[in-house]
Every structure is written in C-alpha cells, then in structure tokens.
Length: 179
Image (cartoon, rainbow, N blue to C red):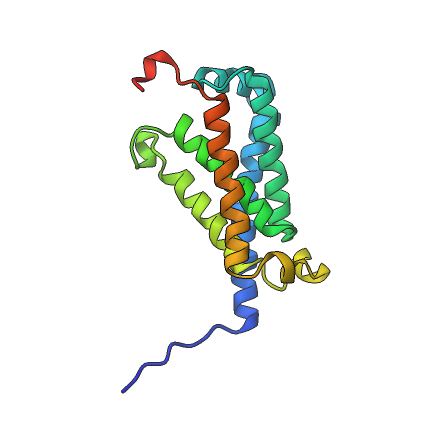
C-alpha cells in the first residue's frame, strides 16, 4: 500500500502564506515601532546600539533599524515586494544575532535562537512567495519576484550582504564583550 500525501489546495496555501506573512510582518513591525516610538524612542535605541558597539553614531543605526523593521513589516503584511521585505528581515536578524544575541543558541540565555527562526521564516516566505492574497499577486509582481529559487535568492543574498556588510563596516564590539 502506498501513501499519497495530499497536496494543499490553492486556498490552503494562500491562507498559510497570508498567516506567515502577517505573523512575521507584525512581529518585525512591532520591533521597529518599539525602537521608534516606545521606551527611550530613537534616542534610547541609539544609546543601546552604541553600547552594543555600532559606530560611528548609534542614532543613524537606530533610524536605519527602525525604518527597515517598520517598512519590511508593512510590506510583508501587504505581500508587496515580498522577497525584498524578507531581505530586510534577514539583514536585521543577522546584525541582531551578532551584536545583541551572542550568548549561545537559546533565547532564554539571550542567544540567537529567536532571530534565527525569524530570519529563516522570512527566507521561506521569500522562496514560497506571498500567495494569491497579496499585492504582489494583484500587480503581477509575484511572477517576477516570487518564483521559488529566485524568490529565495532575492531574499537571502541581499539580506546576508546587508547584514554582514553592516557588521563589517560599523560594528566594533565593546572591549568588555570578550571578543
């Protein structure tokens, strides 16, 4: 007896992709909102970034991170320029994993587990595309941007390049970090 795995219907796939986009989109948007408008706002975020070793000016990085998170979050929720929005999430996660979440893998020890999952989730969304319930589908951009390997590459390559590039150009770990 052979087992045939059921193939999800288009509606099931579109529902799952809408949920995935909204979960990641809202999560990353709220991170950006928190940096820009809550707690210490941009000034507090800038001080925190400077404490992590982001140079030459934490304020520049605070605005860049908040803007990227807010923009990528909105774009993912709308399903617009989906793999590029995923690249923004991946870039943010790469920087966060190295600068702030450096204490091993597990999040409860301030490890990189959370940003790894969020970045991977973004890469998967980039690869699979936003589904039919998206502005990419409505405008026809999904046929250009969101085609399997192409969508994955559009998400992962710029995400890794901007994340690693940001670290190489602007991160100078504090002396007390042990690195």
